[in-house]
Structures are given as C-alpha cells and as structure tokens.
Image 1 (cartoon, rainbow, N blue to C red):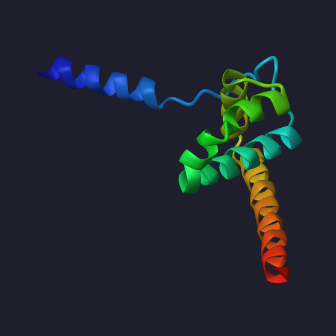
Image 2 (image 1 turned 120 degrees about the horizontal axis):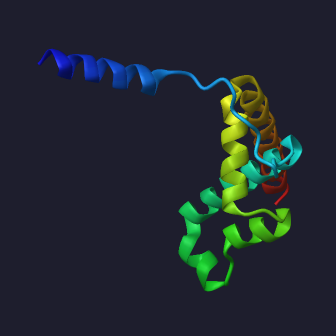
Length: 116
C-alpha cells in the first residue's frame, strides 16, 4: 500500500511539472494571420450552426476556404495555437483582437440592416 501511494505521488508530480522550454513550431503562423484565422473559424462555426444545410446545398464548405485563403492546414494551426496558448499574455492579446474584429463586424452588419 505504501508503494502505491509513493507511486501515485510520483506520477502526479511528473504530470504537474511545468515545461518551461516550449519551443515554437518551425512554421509558426504570425499573430496577425492567427487573428484572421480564428475570426474566420468563429464566424464559419456560427454560420454552420444557423444554416448548415443551406451552406452544404450551395456547396459552401467554410473549412476548405479557410485552408485555401490562408494557405495553412489544421496541423499548422493547432501547433501555432498551442504555441501562442503557452504564453497566456500573447494568446490573450490575440483573442482581444479577434473580439474587437467581431464587434466591428457586428456594428457594420447592424448598420446595413437598419438601412434596409
């Protein structure tokens, strides 16, 4: 029983140890591009939730357009996202810029709706 407790404590200490030398991936996506990609992903997810069948009937697949527009793939995005997420301040600054972009887009759309 005592060995089991020691084993569990050792496992937990290794699992909780911090990794201070997180290396950036070779093809790290620049912050500006990450802001644009995250924005596009959020908007496309919202569009899919409200009208997925309509988009599919028209042959629109937002994930494909994001890949071709930004010339990236899901692995590169995931690695870059993890690298930025490792530094909380950097990731927070990216998400603040995404939020600002969403707010601006919302205001533009609302003004167009009011005109009509």
